Image (cartoon, rainbow, N blue to C red; front, side):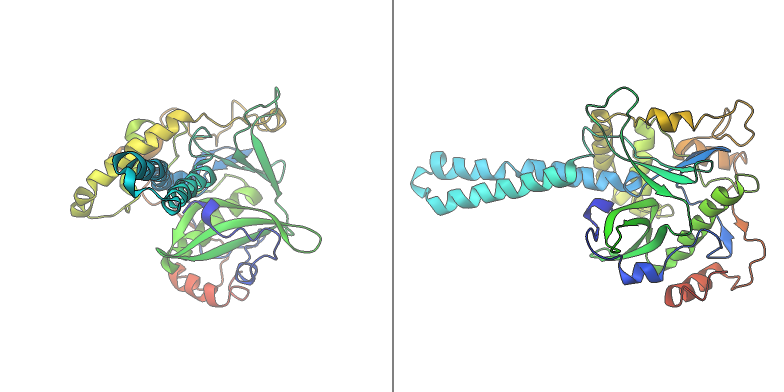
Length: 356
């Protein structure tokens, strides 16, 4: 789910549930270390990761297109009542038609910004040397030279508020890893989600392993980290747009389900391609570019020549045995529950007592 339609809590305290499930940066929150498809690139200096809407934006793009078409309901009603059936016109019907068009126009404006004529992706940079997260949030249309796009910063310190956020929706319970910025009164001033979305309590195990992955990188560097699940492409092709739409129905969905949903998958693919065509790649400010230079001899700079990038190439490389399938590592010195799923279930109930 796009974080723009989730609770922001701006001007309010951080939700109690989120604070209770705060994620520490100095100790592990589970027995596993693993990436689950959140990575663009990695090197000794920084790692760029996705934000939740990157994987699922085709759903919202299609919804925005539908809402845009529905704006025409108002003019159509006006045409019916004033031209086609002129004797049916009345002021109440006119007000109703205007309200319909205004309502859908509001939805398009509120939720369509950024999906069209915005950025193709909004990376979040874990910067080891600066000890900060840099998150590109929006396109800057009239940027000065070197200014780049709109950036939010989050310090990588023990005082920073990173939490697992829970939201109950009509599609079930979803979880995001979030960073909250608060004022002197403890009220939220900024909030953004990091990485992918987690659906249902069964995926909390994955969320905790993903957080361990980021902490291991920021605290100890890339040495010893397992390979990411894949490196997402920053040059999305029509094939990748199709695979994003296909896997949006589940990585392990049965063939029958995929065939049944193929018309919708193709619609999603076209919508994603169209939206990307109206957008551009993000631009980092010159100050961040300056501190993010990659050494030519960086042994951990990935993806490099020969490394598969994107869904299609990674799956083919795994089938050839050239890229690991389900790469993971265990937390050294872990003394808690060794079963990741059982630990995650217990952590949801008593998080403070389960991190070690």
